[in-house]
Length: 471
Image (tube, rainbow, N blue to C red; front, side, top):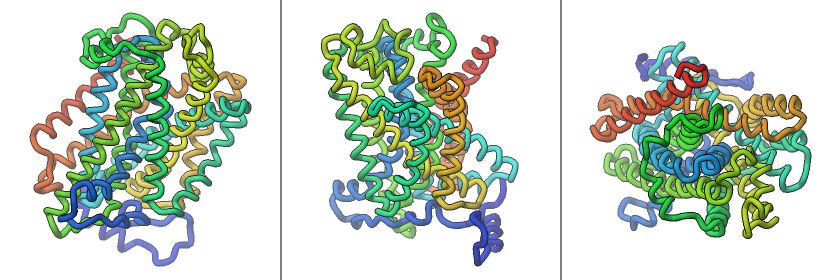
């Protein structure tokens, strides 16, 4: 590991005074344009008032836990295995709360995001390797956003998929316009879209009349949750489990949260103020992730209540959209109105994820490689990389949506495989008293984190091995 102070001095020493290129080396704060820009009430102010001021970053983090990738894995998990995989969603959400707490704390205490913390303490080869792994995770996330947004537009307006895939490239303009309004405005827009998704699925869940006793019972993990019997390939239980974990515990969110937790003005010379900021960050994060947990649960519940027994007929978003308007599948509640609500919620989900994906791209590039490019160029590059495989699949299969849905599910499994590479540095850094001082993880938080890391790694080894016929 390199000495972070000497590395930082070296970056500042070589930092150019004038920039003649789109790429500039940087030793600046994470997302400097918004870092420390949000004022908060003094420590003596009422708790609810301070919590409101700290609320917002949790919403941006929660977006990643309800992106279009979750929709495929959770709804199809319900359609294939009824309520069985609810325990996986619960465990994944608890792991997410633990990891996001660590990420937010790292940002507030050290004033470094996870990419910076890793890049400043790792040699060049390690930094490049971890950057590539994280970029893979980000591209996988972006593919889900592209497919989800393109399919939603196609469902709502009847446009060909090839056209709507191209249209998703222009969401960069939406994001750049939003950034002009300030960070709190972005947080408010994201929170509104989350509430929209929540209302839609509360309504769909209520109409589907699920078996509530079966739901509660299946939040308790069972050995057969990972049973290899039943469906195989991309629909096998182990792949569904890994897909739900990959779709729920998002690697890029760890980098995002460690950065945007720094947007609040905190007196870092006062340990009590830092401790209070960490506590309020944890409240904000856990409240928002609880909402994400309910939304993910409702995705699976709707899939189980309405579509169980029809898994073979529902391979993607278009089939789900049609099923909500088909009384032979969805029963008496089927209607065009429900189908439209579903498509609107899907579009909101995709656009929400676009905002956070762009911010994360900037964070990991600056943190690992110590240079940055303008946001518009970063977005063009990221979205271009994500659109390429989507366009290739769309053109090759003649706009057959089923193959795009399989692409989404594959990316969620890939996210699960990539996750440990983000978890390990985070747990190590936040558990180190040398790095975090008095804010280092307690023993139970530290060991719970490592147990989660080992558990997910074992699942991933089994997943990869099973795909190659080794298990």
